[in-house]
Amino acid sequence: MLTVVLGLAGALVYGAADFLGGLAARRISALRVTAIGALSGVVLLFIAAVVVGGRWSVEALFWGGLSGVTGAAAIALLYACLAIGPMSILSPLTAVTSAIVPLTWGLATGSQLGIIAYPAFALALVAVVLVGLVPDQRAVRPTMPGLLMATGSGILIGAFYILIDQTPDDSGLIPLVANRTVNASIMITLIIVLAVVAGRRHIRAQDAPLAVIAGTHAAPHALEQVEAPARLSLLRASAAALRGGWRGGLLLAIGCGVLDAIANIIVLAGLRLGDLTVVSVLTALYPAGTILLAAVVLRERIAPLQWVGLALALAASAMLAAA
Image 1: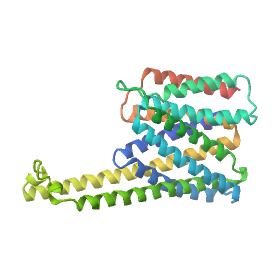
Image 2 (image 1 turned 30 degrees about the vertical axis):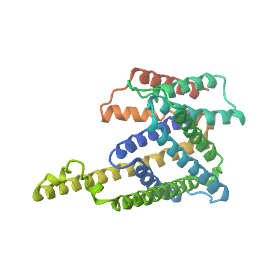
Image 3 (image 1 turned 45 degrees about the vertical axis):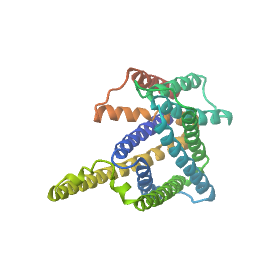
Image 4 (image 1 turned 135 degrees about the vertical axis):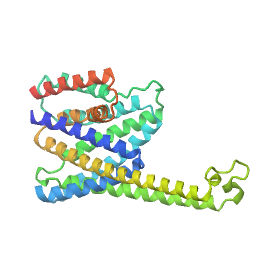
């Protein structure tokens, strides 16, 4: 019963983290949100690890760090596939794959579950698809690269659960500290590389002929048509708006990282106390937390099929609790 509660709690907190991350990405780039969230998560997890305690070991650092690599790669593939779209197909594909991988691993390595658990898993996987469904009237058929990246992201997310489940029981939160440290290092390095590349492209653009930069054969820039005092006022207003967007985005990104770290703690506790298959399948219901918050905070409409998915998720959870 406790494992089911922890699995559902992890899903809801993951969903809340994604909700804050989505809001932050509207103000600053998704890559920056990921890096800032990873850094804030490192701080929280390190403090929590000191309080909780645990034995530092090569195994804890190795499996935790390796799960950080898979997590960073999963995020990169997830963003890439969602950018290609359609989200209505690729998002639930990622979620259900992330559940199937550890479920298959757990069953293959001898997880002992009651008979009722198997139909419960099937019901939960259907719920994952329905809950993660993003209604889109303009949705088109997904491309092969999109399908491959969504599947790859789901496999790597599932690998995270498998790898973190290999960590020693006496290691406390140390594996999560290693996970988030590696994840943050990768994301920050990626941002620096992209910033350097963008800077070089900007320099090359500045070295281009003046006629091209000034737009000689085009209409004058709108800002150039504004009188000097008005132009200065416009620039100040734009700068203030940019600072406000950054400030709000930064706070949301930090909140996203904190919630994500808390979700990791909940999932690790579930894995230590219960079964990998149960925790991973229930955690894959993380879109439920996102859509519920979006409905409450942003007044977004929950589609009928998503309501069906939520109902099936509750039914599957009750069956797993009784298994």
